Image 1 (tube, rainbow, N blue to C red):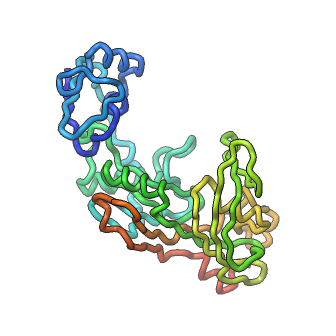
Image 2: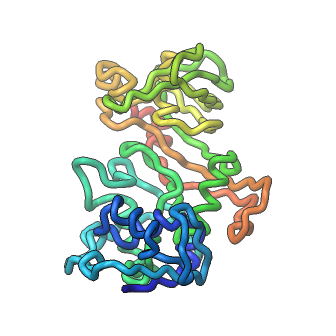
Length: 322
């Protein structure tokens, strides 16, 4: 039997979710059976699968020791590179400037060198994160951007901050601004585009239509053309909704794909303008604009953060992208 005292980072979870994370070797079917038969209890009492855990609750697990055994191995995140570009940091969050080419999370081909892996290593070496002292929480990203998109990514150091960030992103109390270079010039100097997007999971692509269609989701993209030079345009974009590949697909639907985007643009056009193989897109500014209580993150209200490294902006004005 082992007992676990619920920490602040564990609080608010359902019992079954907590057990799954804390004892990953325990099969799900057996876990549900043990909860029903009172071999897993909360505060020495029978609990439901959906019981919400509170800070300082005690979860007792009367299960075999073999389920608690841990493999003796080095933490995977310690193999990740140390390189991190930190824009802002406090006791609750990190704002990182992710470089193009770096994955936010592991995929089928790359597991070790990811932004979240680098963050875990950084916090572990600082003494702010120790997996052995956490029952279930690990530092996590509140947003993500494509591998070949650069710019600001938000990381939460604790569960409460992650919960608040997720709520604020969902309620559109965080505003994200992007800079990009498009092939061609959008039809208006500034506009708010409304469209309907459908994601094809198999091909990891999306398509955008001016009219709704089955399983599509509404998207809104606000853009302003800052300048146009030699067939290219520098465009400022605010995401009013946040969908997969929204900016890339929405601008391409106007006939102005992002320079370097081979998925929604034209490789032939990209070769004409220097042969870029990564879309020229950067999430360069993040603004906190809370309209409801933000709890421990209330101090961020009204603050704005920017990345100063947007290499293609300078090259655009120098005329070096052509």
